[in-house]
Length: 435
Image (cartoon, rainbow, N blue to C red):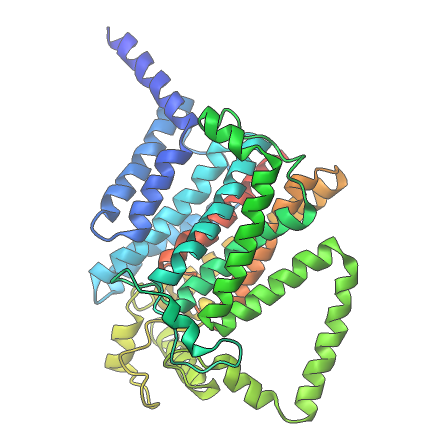
């Protein structure tokens, strides 16, 4: 009797592991987007690990990012010990745990190129959906002057949500999502891309496998993401999107490489005409930050925190409280309004200390090299679909780093925190197909 129950439990667990991506998505969403239900999301994610162990006989496949992930996990009790506000820190740590689980969940669920294609299309539709809801859910910088966008454009967008999305946070997420529809579009692989039939209900699969539907989805996603990026007035987002566009277009059509000497010549001309300081002020201005000096002051406060708390950090997601209490700003208007270090690497070190920064850099570097290895392999084997997805993943991480020079919204302090981990998970799955 007990043996029969045990066998049925193992069989049911194995079946659930085969469809892990769907409950995993729910768990990540709860842990990332909500505070009240975050604990339920984490418990669902933990239950999926148990089901995987029962059904398949192992907790996870081996991934090359294991040691940096373990170091990040070790920093979690440390940051709870160091924090002055456990509620805020729990929000950030929930996102970190959900993100790390997402990497492993994708790697364990994905067994073939059709599943990788479904994940890539998922990122395309996430980007498209985010761009569609942005006009009515973002707290736009309507009062900040821009030579690109007339102010009256923002009057066309009614705000329908009380808890609005910050434009810089939207820009960071959209910039990382941009490479996937763009790469699939410029390589025009819709006719040769793997089908998703059998992974989703039949009617949905038949629509998703239509080449015209995939081209339409990628085209709309690319266009709307670029439009929303422009409307955010996020300089970091603009620069990241420009770098991403260059990387993908130059890889596809090599004559775009001529943009490198042209760009260097333009920078040289600006330096010769002494316009670089003015350009830096324009690029650095965002929201309450009036220019380059304001950004330098924020970075300086972050460095003071790292010097004072090098091994523990100040406690994840408490930058605003700590900086106003112990490291007050001299610049008028910054106090009480700066929620993070406005630099990705500084923010990681502020939150989790130098050990956390080392772990994050290792995670980033390992996934980046895995992406390059996959890109080279799929190019040599003429698997252009997976080659384009590897390129998109690499471009996405590069965009995160570029955007992270001026902002930190892709880290666990923002609701878009799942996007970098999703991209890393796809790169890990692409690497896993080589073995």
